[in-house]
Image (tube, rainbow over all chains, first blue to last red; front, side, top):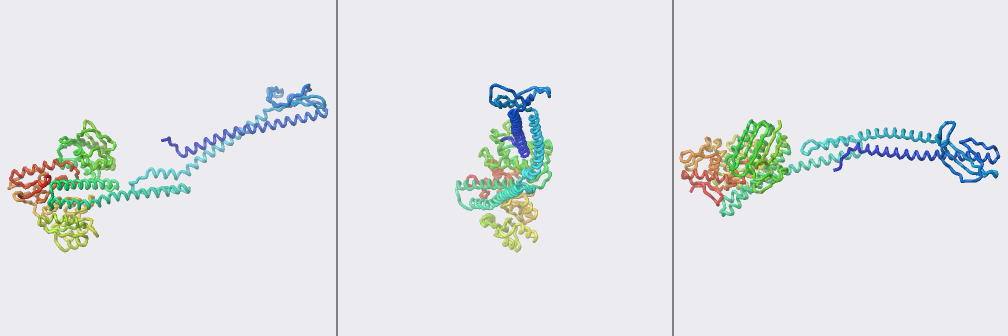
Length: 416
Length: 224
């Protein structure tokens, strides 16, 4: 995943870089263009002065020499006209100055002359600098204003988008509340809003339907199962069957029992999802554990050692408390090695239950997933731990699994 | 005893009726709401077995009518819905027991007998079978007037056997009865053999050899 950048930051950044690039580029262009223009102007002046000097010479007027601006010299050899920059001492300024110089060689009235005209470059340089600097200042001011305005404007324009994004982050499938989005006068945002509303509405409806379907199926299966069960009971009582048939038929009873348990557990899971357990009472889990132990005492080869330093009293639904404790104990009994002890200990804020196991769970992170099983030895449905997790999540209890000293250990922390 | 079975699934209805008739009970059936409504209004029953979701109406309304007319009938609700609120509603309205489908006929039979024993409906608190006598009030079992030392499960098992005497009980049925509704501890049947064998030994010691093996792995409580 690449590093994510905020939208406003991104557009501002682009704007800023484009602006800076344009300033630099246009300044350079402006500089060279103006300089060229000014140089042409200077050269034009030089050519025009030179033309006047030539004109004066042709009319046999007196030759002026006004160094360094104009110099006329008689020469013996004609050369090619040239233009160049030159540095000459200017007595008026008392310093060395840069001049543009035009030298032409002409034969006028049979005499050969070198006519040199010069112009001070400093002035044009100053103009050039003044133009570029003022351009830079104006451009930068305008740009800064635009940048500020644009960023502010962006924030206002995108506001409904950000607000709706926040709403979507808080969207929950299980909550009954529909999503509340803000309207915008921008067509695309308005469209986005209605699309999101349609989509979340549909997802929610589908989710509700699916849950309803699951619950309905669980219920509807019960009646045919009851019929199958009753027919089996009738067969073993009224028909003459052999031992093999009896074993096959009664093993169907076991499968019916599994389906019954499966239905029951799915119903519990959907009901927790549907928030149908809303009654909360103060439950003494210590008493509840004692009651369950008493119930299971004669049903298992394992012993259960229970130590309670204090009464563990938790506010929760009584039915869910019963399921939670029941599932924890049956899970421990089921996966314990035969003739071993299941240990349960509670204090005022926690419950720890452990049983001896052969080896650690291969994928503890998958342990609480629905239908996750690591062996088919026990005909487990694979929903018991998922239900424990669901109940703990509902009440914000902390449940964790560890395998230490050959013991599968489940710890529940009840925050108060 | 006279029973009414209000259940719209005729297969289930007939299977229940068949099973219960074995003890010499009279079983009437109702296949829809109107039929059930009519029968409970006109006749008297000792036990009404009531399906909650009857075609064209709710069994809960039948229950209300029975209670309103102060009928003496014990009511056992059978429902496909295992939600606690439904169960509590039914019991609050005066139903005597609530069973979730699917259930074993033997279990239904033993629940019916338990309801009858509670005295209100003309049953007896004492169960007798030849020399065996069980006082369900004090939860004590006697054989030839001598009290038997039974564990809780052995006691449950003895009542279950006598309630379903003459019927074949598979280990699955027995396991479900002993574990109760909330348990799925059924993959290990060893504990059942232990309890049955202990009970059998205790009975045999007194000369009562009523627990017989049927089809190798099932049981039948029957006189020789």
